[in-house]
Image (cartoon, rainbow, N blue to C red):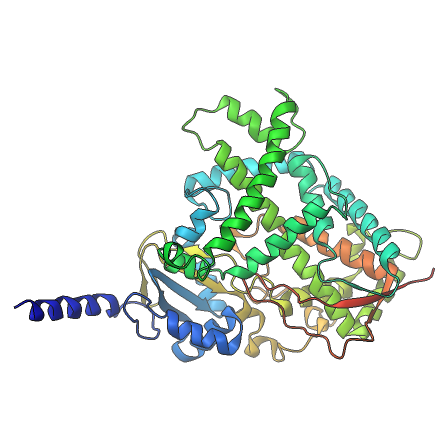
Length: 491
């Protein structure tokens, strides 16, 4: 009697779990519970990178692909037309809402990276306003970066006996620039605890992909297999980060005044005193904001500069041309500044080519459909995670012709001026959710890059057979360890 009923329930469950509305974007068939996870994992094991899996799926199903990853519906757009459609429409300006995106902010939608709506607008406006008060986007910020670059060069000169690892050489220096605006202090380049924390951040970015990974797709696994889904490690990382930031905030509480904030943390604490308990200015939001800025402000820029060193090793002729341009414009008796940038088009083209080919944020930052909407002829349901393949436009064969070749000249016109093509070069995204720290990142890239090449010739370690240009996979792509021989340039 019960057997037919059990079969009926099982059949209905299977149909419900595998049924995909015809209006949804194309993609492989779903399996019950796990959706497309098994097929995606198989492709990932073969290709090694999440963005390459989406690139392969786009070749099969077209520029808009829909997968069910556990309980998450993930839509990925590929190519300039589809990416532009997502980045220019308000319906896709949301950020994902799931366990992975909330666990880092106390189970709530806090911070500024993965929040949206009026809360995000309010917090973003406050953060930008007060970061500008402490130099963000101004001449003062550039001067700080110059000072940090001088500290770094002095440190490298002391260590440049033989070869040294260069893939993480910029970590502390890059963070220091933002940290002085956030917390009013800087770290020593050999600060053991900070170096450990920055390694933790690198590990965190490699643990997951931009969709949130297994922890977001099947959050119940944290109770069944916490080690397998990454929950154990992510909680260890978050606990150490929270502790470090809480200590900094606690020190500020002891000394913050009623007026004249010294930094962003001071400004936030002062704001908390005049806001009601229902407002968005809370202890948890302050900690989440600091966590977002700390992680986002160090990872992408540091990785890009690491790749810059790697490509200069790989292409010594390009390195020499950059150094010749620096010598012609700057000379040997002063430090490069942002005022020199306009007269150094080749150097700028090299930095743009590094950003294009390295694809440090290959899928940008995940978006969310804030309502059910049309994307071309397809229906994207409310709440779907939407990924934009920046990799696909940076490596578009039809536009770039030879996208896998490192060729800085592609960003120069026949007259030698810098050329930046619309919708084919988007390392900072586009639209309302464009990277908040773009001006800081660009200044960091130029000053640190030119400072190193102004002072050193980079040579490959003789013990290295071949440079590995492929980075670690993750939310961002980071360079694998590599050694450099730094030869001081003589005046």
